Amino acid sequence: MKHEELSRALEFLDEDLLLEADAARTATVVRGIHRPHWKQFLKQPRNWISAACILLSVSLLAVTLLLGSMHGFYLGPLEIPNGETGEKKPSNLWEQVISFENMPNSSEEFSEWIQDENCVVREGLVITKGNELLREFYLTTMKKKPATLIGINKSSDSTSMLFYEIVYDGQTYLCTTFEDGDVSKKKVEEYRFLNSESEIFGGELYQTFVLTNYEDIYWSDISRDSLRSDAVYAHCVYLLFLGYLKIN
Amino acid sequence: MKDALLVDLFWQRDETAVETTQKHYRAYLHKVAYQILGDELDCEEIVNDVYVALWNSIPPHRPENLRAYAAKITRRLAIKRYEQKTAQKRVASEYAVSLEELREVGGDVAAPEEHPEELGRCISAFLRERTPKERRIFLRRYYYADPVEQIAKGEGVSASAVYKTLGTLREALRTYLIKEGYSL
Image 1: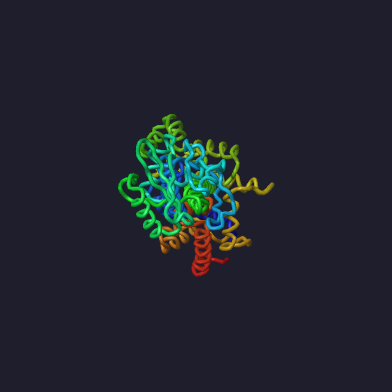
Image 2: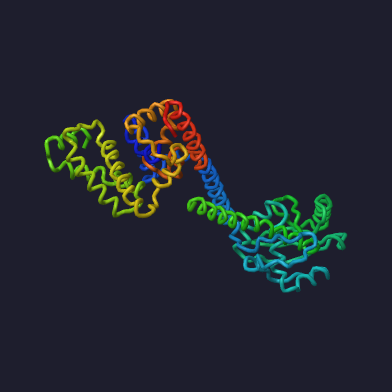
């Protein structure tokens, strides 16, 4: 028997069999024309991947937009340098965000540092790092208005720590250098005792990196923002991936 | 319009029957023909021939399912045209590919003693022993000459799964036909 004869013989198949196949065929054609039913969509494993990607993509976009609206958008480099070595200089993230007037009378270290043309950036970092409330304060208030740094005070052990105050909008805020949280707390208490006239923001102690650890802080902030960048880039990658799935 | 009413129009020799058939089934019949011939112009001619064939065959026939009946005529005419064309040159169509696949079941040697009606009934019996899904895959591939990817999409499986099923079905059909006394 030739295979052509076999094919021709199919014409004489029972009609109900043909109708059964035709019904399935028509359903496919209809699905091809109209938007697939979600049940049909989820039947295929590849669509599960697409659905997961869409969900992830939307989530990433939402998180990105949320963080972006709260903290400002940053689309800088993805590279996160080594925070400990601080080999690479960061870009001027906060330069446009905050500025200080009336440079303080300070210790030699601080004076030297403050004369650096990038001090404004560093001051920005002082505020953004540390206690969540203080950071929140920076993000919600200081970001919008220039702050005034009016004074600086040394602690009893100025070789390792430096205290200074920032008065902003009529209120004094305390910032300090430190390497260790417990030590810092102790030093802040000491400072508070020695400078009882100072108000401490919110009546609590705040730990803020400055000077000696500024590069660490800087990189930490870079990392934080880079995470947002990661979200943006990842979102783009997922969109491309979805496009690829759609094409194929 | 329901098929029964449409068939009635043919029986009443009402010329709107052809227009209505064209309106309802032109795209469908065109697709059936295209899978076999792979040529738009040929398909247009075949579909037009189908309308004539319907007009000439109803009456005396009274098909219960006009759509399937018209598809059957379309397939027959398209295969006839396909054979005419392949006598001159190779035709690139999905049917040509599916026919090649059937070579595994049939072969190259003609055996004129078999009657196609009888063979059709035998294949029907074979298909009834298979699962509905296997039947659909087999008929969509070898009756309608649908592309494997389209069948896979319709069944919600991968193309490779469809290929595998088709291979198994061909082998099983060959065994079945030999068992039924066919010379392959």
